[in-house]
Image (cartoon, rainbow, N blue to C red; front, side, top):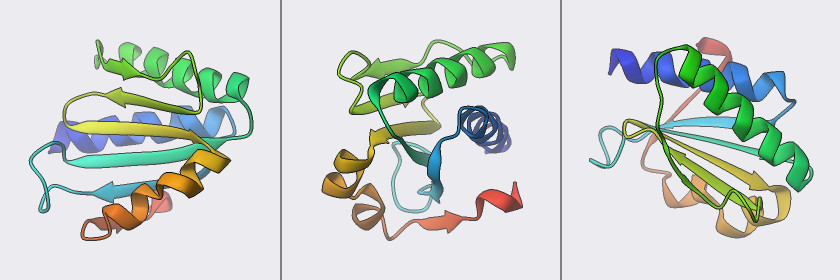
Length: 116
């Protein structure tokens, strides 16, 4: 779990660097075995969303966390990066409202981004 927390810190910093909006962290470790955390954010357009994801991948690689599973990069309306223990969801504003991941995983514990 210590590595997971470090991964979350690196992701959030990389997202903030590219002006991600409404970054949320959900601890799902007590709810599911698929991961420890979900990190969720949204961007304003496909170019920004791809830039956010590119920056996360670059910063994660520099921190020793590499080779994520990537889904949705070309459409850039919902991109998922799966680092096993931490899963990043980057949405367009419209898709985030539609899929409402936070509601689906409300049994998880939301972590304050400022407490990292």
